[in-house]
Image (cartoon, rainbow, N blue to C red; front, side, top):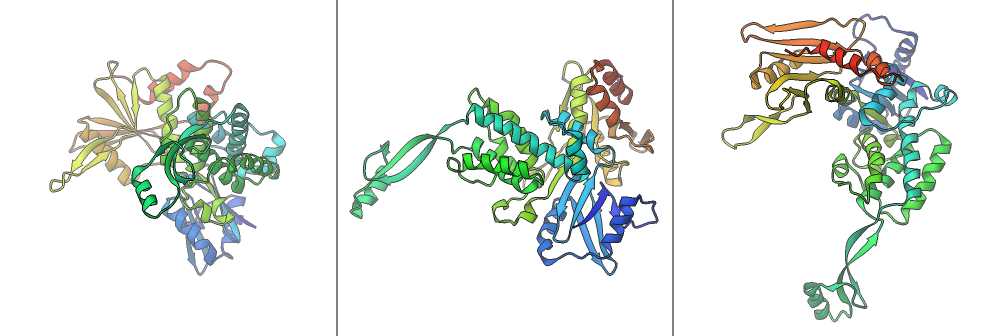
Length: 424
C-alpha cells in the first residue's frame, strides 16, 4: 500500500518551489504514479464535500490538497494521512483529551512505535472507547419502556379500537394490541452498537477487533442496528438511570463526527475505515475552555444572533462569533473573539470579524490563532470605519505543558490570557 503523508492545509505536489522534508518528497514521487480508481470516486467526493481533502488528476499524476482535518483516508491503491501542523501527535492527544474530557489512555511506547503517527490518534480514541464500553457493560445497560403495536391471539396491554374494527371486518381472529416492554433496544444502546461497528472497521489492532466483536455479540441480540448521526446524540437526556453513559457517549460523538458517513451499513470496509478529526472545532473549544476556566471575566461560546433579515419573507440569518467576553455582571459584551486554526487570516476572515465588530457596535475585535515560529502580533485597522482587529497567537504546546504539569499553574495560564486580551 502506497502511503501519502502531508500536513493540514498543505498541497502536494506544492504549487511553488518549496523545501520539502524526506517524507513529503517521497509522497510527491508516489503521487506521480497514482490515479483514482472508479471505486474511489465516492469516497473522494464525500471527503471533498466535507471540506477534508481534495484530489485532482492530471498528466503528472495526482495533486492532493488538505484542509483543517487530521486523520487517515484509505483508497484502493494508497492511503492519505494528514498530520498536525502546529503540534506533534502526542500533544494532539493531550489537546483532544483536555478539550473533550475523555480520559484518553496513553499507549505504551512499544505500541506507539508500531502504530506511528498514521493511526495513533484513531487507535487511542477507539481503545479508550472500548475500555469505557467494557466497564459500562459490566455495570449494566440501561433499559427503558418501548411502545409496541401488534396483532395478538390474546389481549395484551390495551386494545386499539380502530385497528380492531379492521381486524373484525376481515374476520381476523386477533386482538389489535398496544403495549409497553421494558427492553434494552433504546437510543443509548443503539449508539453503542453503531460506534462499536464503526470502530471494528477503523482499528488495525487485531486483538482490539476481537474485543469489539465480542461486545457487539452481547448487544446484537438485544439492540437493533440504527444509523446514528450527531443529532441523535443531542437527543439523550441524562438522569440517574443513564448518567454512566455520558462519558462513553462523549467518545461516541467524536467517533460519529470523525467522518459524517450517513450510509454506513451500505458501505464496504474501505469506505468506512477513514477517520478524521476537525481541528478547527478542537482549537475553538480549546480556546473557549481556557477563557471560561482561567480568564477573570465570564464568557460564552458560539452565540447565535440574527443579523440579517429578508424583507419579503421575514427569514433571518444568524452571525456566530466564537467567543464573547462579558463584564463582571454578565450584562455588557466587553470583547469579541474569533478563533482560526491557521497561520494567517484570509481576506474573508478579516471581513467576517469586521462584521462582528460593527454588528455588536464595538471598536475592536480579536482573532486568536495557533502560535508558530513565524507568528507575529498584528493590528489591522479599517481607518474609514474606525475599527481594528488584533491578531494574536496562543502557544498550544506551552499551555498544555502548564495544564498537564503536576504543579498548579492556574495563575500562569490566566496571565497568558491577559497578555493576549488585556482588561480595560
